[in-house]
Amino acid sequence: MRIKKGFKMQSVGGENIILLQGTYGVDTTKIVSFDDTSLFLWSLYEDKEFTTEQIAESLIEEYGIEKDLALKDAESWVDTLIQNRLIEQQ
Image (cartoon, rainbow, N blue to C red; front, side, top):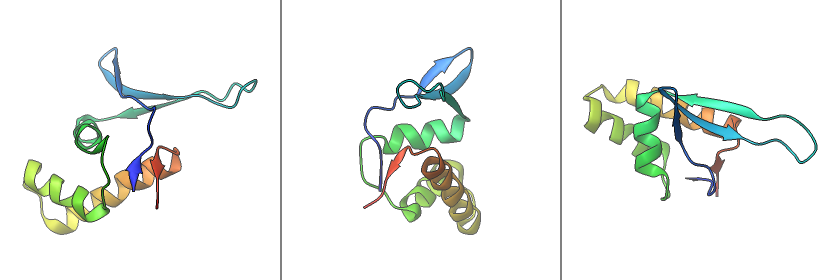
């Protein structure tokens, strides 16, 4: 899987956000706010393929957390991307 091209993280008022535009003519603009960990993962994987396991390994290396927690957090992050249509799955 990979993050879809065209979406960029922006810092606005101290928040890390992505604006999701709705369909033309329909006002369904949505803002997705990311914490510092999400920003770290986004920056690391924005332009490359990844798996949930790779996300977990990155969390372990960066934050020194246990593997079970890292996998749970990685799955949650990926689920958030999928729910907001920010990810391409192959």
